[in-house]
Amino acid sequence: MAETKPKPKLKKQAIEMRKQEPKVRAKNFNEVALGYTEEEALEEASRCLTCPNPQCVTGCPVEVPIPQFIKCIKEKKYAEGIATIKSKNALPAVCGRVCPQESQCQSKCVIGKMGEPVSIGRLERFLADWERDNGFQLPPKAQSTGKKVAVIGAGPAGLTVAADLVKVGHEVTQFEALHVGGGVLSYGIPEFRLPKAIVQNEVNYVEKLGVDLRLGNLIGRTHTIPELMKNGYDAVFIGSGAGLPQFTGCPGENLGGVYSANEFLIRVNLMKAFQFPDYDTPIRIGKHVVVIGGGNVAMDCARCSMRLGAEVCLVYRRSRNELPARHEEIENAEEEGLVCKFLAAPLEFYGNERGWVKSMKCICMELTEPDARGRRGVKQIPNSEFTMDVDTVIIAIGQTPNPIIGRTTDGLQSDPRRGTICVDEVGKTSLDGVYAGGDVATGAATVISAMGAGKRAAKAMHEYLTNKK
Image 1 (tube, rainbow, N blue to C red):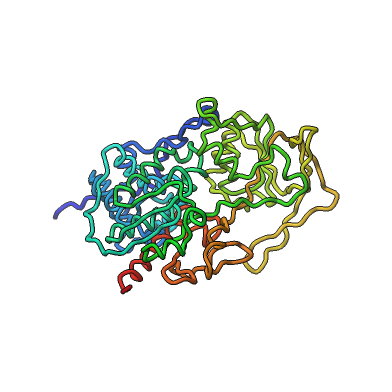
Image 2 (image 1 turned 45 degrees about the vertical axis):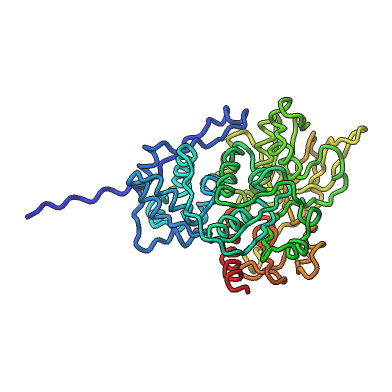
């Protein structure tokens, strides 16, 4: 009787990714996570069961065929693996670094019910980094459809739409207001989380697919959407993001040293203030920085400030349990020295004789009972005011879309309260041939949700263009 081989024992623990030590990384802007070695990637990939009915794919907004690319890693077919990913996702090196896999694809992983889920994002990053070291593989060029598409914005939504439409034969022109592509990937996410060379490598790939990227073009000023449609474009996608900061409305908010998160991160990331004086963009923050907010943007501001030499306190009006930032980012920030003040909110900012912020008055808050959606509100605790000495305050409580496109496009419906463009489930706006997606339609959200919206819009636009006479 033939002897049956025992099944290999399931490895319940994921392979950890190496990181810079907290005391070291808190003083530099180099990437914190160091990526998998080939041996580590192979060991982690071996944990995947290659399920016949993979639930992980249902948790991916861009429908990456996850078991297939992990199988390629197991077989050391890395070129085939990255091609498998890029059949659905044009930005794998970005997604492998900043996508919240723990709440999406990895949350559906079967192994996660018995131990830690397969590290899908880390494996995606491994293949993307392998490709960067070994060169792009471009898919076969599709036959031209003769249709022209204008894509507004070169952020994650716009890059996704542009890549998907050019791959099926449409002529795509992408208009970007800034001097580099990438959108929020370039100006909003710090170097230590997402190196700018990685972003530009992804942008270069989309250009190599055949997209005509035109930088320094602010739609609404350089051109308007009606002008684009008159000049031969058959369809338009609006992916201009949410770059307009929100403020607290507290007295003294216009003092020197009070930054919006947008301005602060643009100075540090895009204008490279952290490399001053090599880059002529000084940024003064002093010794004591307060960041108001609790999302990933707030964590980015706090971690940048610590690297610039400040002691940083995060002020958040709810408790730790309600922090919206990724757990990994909170953990990294606290390892690097972040101090958190929960259940507190600003009331007023005070300045010195030179008009620079010197202190802020806050008030303690308490949580209310959950509402119908299960979300707990907050209310002030009477007579609980306190004052903090500050050199700099960074307000990171959200962003809304810039209204310039809506103001220059008659008939484009938008939400008057949120400033977002109104779209249906596939991104179609109130105007024929005009689609929108990402933060401009939803308000500030994740990179991967913007990419998912871009993919849905690209499918709908392709159908629209195919049927257009």
